[in-house]
Length: 530
Image (cartoon, rainbow, N blue to C red; front, side, top):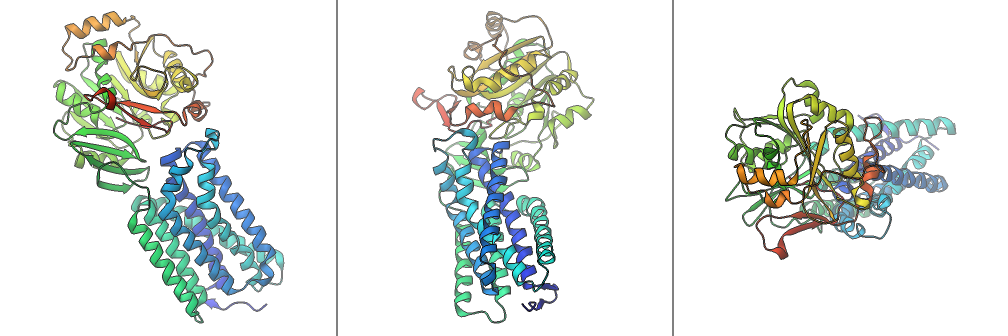
């Protein structure tokens, strides 16, 4: 078969261009899949393993079917594959969110919960792209099968490398998920047009224009089913997560990966919208000498904002890894750096390792939807926090788990890990039942046991800016931990420990509301609310 003419000035033949673009698109879609799937199913090792497995399976099937049909391959065949791929991408943009929500409740084991959605959303377009390589090898004009195959897969791999880096470092920090889908779709349509030139048929023109319009319409609509309660005042895709600021009545909420992370009363910024944040004051009953506080995890800066208002002598440092979260907190949640508030944009463990500053209180509130970063859960990290606390310092950890039952494994493992470093560990479940909830775990370097009665007496005697009688009533000081592991840097099976929580109700108590409306529930395993 004669070689297809080069596409000057790129110096690529048509088959080479097709293979290169298929590599760019398939890898771009794979990284995009992680961003689309994470808000509903989390970004655990199970989710990423499922994404990689589905893409490899779809590509392999496409390679196989494409190889069977390669003898009849033509330039028109390549054009049809790219148009079909772009059409399906438009469908992913338009219906992706509603499909994710529909499949989230399927009765399958939680580790495999994301598989149906990944398969339906990304299996077909990846399967179609698998046709490109065997078609291109057939159309390459090379008589040696090995040489043709090796060249094709080398070009495709280069395309995958470009797609991986471009999507990761350019598209995701700059564009929303629908916009990234639009880019992938437009690339596919544009490649189809280039491959069809100069003898492009009227039918190919109609399809190209029609699919382009469909892609733009799907992107402008934002997709079906994407709806946060309230009015969206800001929305972006950060390097770490999807971020949305939503106003509903007098409450402004920060959503990260579609889960509420912080809420602020616009009329009373220091009011605790979520009841569990009032537990942040418990350390002030355990110590009367708290002047310098570190928050690991910023979100909407609920804790730091309240501390600065209620405790005039306290200086607060906040470490937040996502710079966009910091910018949003300043613009939409009335956060201002000052002599009493210092913000550091970096990883929390890195900050603790590098700083020489010591604190009276360290608050761990660094969560994503599905889990706390494992490096902030281990015994080595707990020792690091102890080194950065004064002699009578306190560690406060916001843990989202259940206080008992199968879903309590992560909480009890974290309790055991903190107990290995700190002489006293207390916990305060916030929802008063066995459901998944915020459990506040407080560890002290002071070995003296403080009882529930001691705390209630101090609550009456001290003015800590809030009455904590109800919060203290959930006091616990012992937990069964023989059946859970001690979390270490070389073995912290956080994903496995969180697995029993998937599909259970996550209950968040709301402050100052009637009993029938006092909770917000999520069906995801973990959501970060601060």
